[in-house]
Image (cartoon, rainbow, N blue to C red; front, side, top):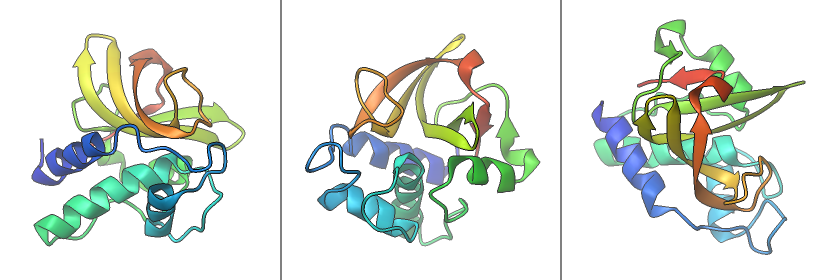
Length: 152
């Protein structure tokens, strides 16, 4: 695992349970920071902004350029990332991509891999499994449900 990936995952772990305030607004002090990191204001879906923010913070600490595309769009991140960085099998620290069709996606950072099951840390989700949630939470997912994984 690269140093930036290791630090981004560690940063994500520190954000567990950060929640929107008020709930259901796609906003709040910390959520707005995630959104600001990709150039968006409060009120937008923020799962990709959360992942970008984690890598951005890690890149600042390492004094390197963030390797992610500055976007709040999950599928834009996937489509514009070099094919050499896209993988079908996960490793810890990978960026998980879900594609729900019609331009809708979801993302998180892989924290653990166990065969065909992964555990991720995701923004704009919840313990119940919503794509449009209200907090940073740990989620269990099937590898088969994922479009793929971005690795740095």
